[in-house]
Image (cartoon, rainbow, N blue to C red; front, side, top):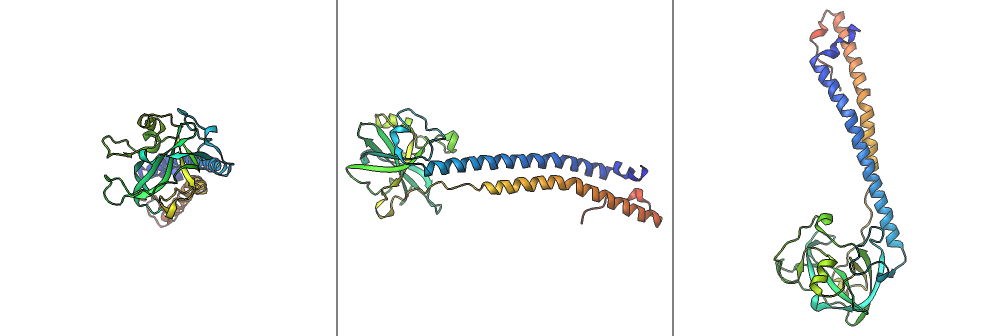
Amino acid sequence: MHRYRFLLSRQWVILTLVALALIPTMIRLGFWQQHRYEERTARNNLVSRALHAEPVPVERLTSPGHAVGRLDRYRTVTATGTFDTAREVVVRRRTNEDGEVGFHVLTPLVLDDGRVLLVNRGWVPANGAQTAFPKVPAPPSGRTTVTGRLMADETTALSGIKEIKGLPDRQIMLINSVEQTKRLGAPVLGGYIEQTSPASRGGSPEQISDPGSEDAPLNYAYMIQWWLFAAGVPVGYYFLVRRELSDRAEAAATDTSPEEREPATAV
């Protein structure tokens, strides 16, 4: 075993410890990517089922004070009522598909029974300073039936958007039915909808596109990659040891002291 005494040298001890640390780290990273893959796959399946489900009246899935759950999020719902443009507000710092910063237009839809549904009609540009109320095209007048995707109330914890006090008149940061109930003084259905029809006149507000799917296969590829790296560490270590043994044998044959040699490096 004296052939392997070089493994006790400072350089080889460090190399061995690094290899031992890398293996479990890479295995854990692989499991983390597996978890992300499963999460994204489940989310994609949930969204797909919701988007392809038959539309139902919004009152079947939510009510005042109700928290929209993950199984109902993105469900296509319909509602009939009258838009209350006098109490319309805009949601600050929202972007469109091109990354332009503007506002989302949130218009209360007063239902036939007097309850209110919050309708996100889409995106409009700022048209100047963010402190000014933007130019917002009017929604259909009179009794109207709208279709949209049911969404959960926005919170700072879930969205990462901070609530800001002292905003300009008719501007908000988060779409939250509880807060809008206080403002409107009327029973507001929990959550809100992203309007998909009727289409906006002239394309404004720009209606929000469906959420699409997250790239779960990418996480799967990363998972395999990390586990291959983990398997490759001991293989690489083995070949480094074999190369060092070979180099030392050659050095011994030419009377070169192997004790002063450093570990061979991979090419």
